[in-house]
Every structure is written in structure tokens, then in C-alpha cells.
Length: 73
Image (cartoon, rainbow, N blue to C red; front, side):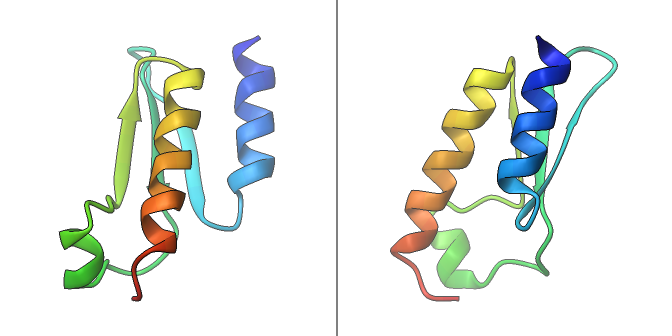
């Protein structure tokens, strides 16, 4: 299941995020863009997010996309 989750997320977020799973089992995603602007950081956008499992990471990425929609770079 974890391999399928990883493949699905990689496909869905490939244009914006690099997604991987650590040796300790945590899930990470790092933006593929350059540094965030001050306005983006003030809006709680993150360069890297971390989660316990795939479902939590999907929720974090959805939250980041929602936050980004309201902020200009």
C-alpha cells in the first residue's frame, strides 16, 4: 500500500513537490520552487512538510495548496 500511495502522490504532485519516505517511516514533501516570498511565509506556506503517514501528507499538501491560492508570490 505504501508504494502505491507514494506513486499516486508523485503523479499528483510531481509539478510542485518532491515526495519521499524516510528510513524512519515518516513522509516528506519539499517544494520544487525557489525560496518562498515573505508574503508566502507569512501565510504559513512551507518549503518542506512532514507527516506520519501518506494520508496525513496528502492533507498537508492540500492545505498548502489552499493557502497558496490566497497568496501572491
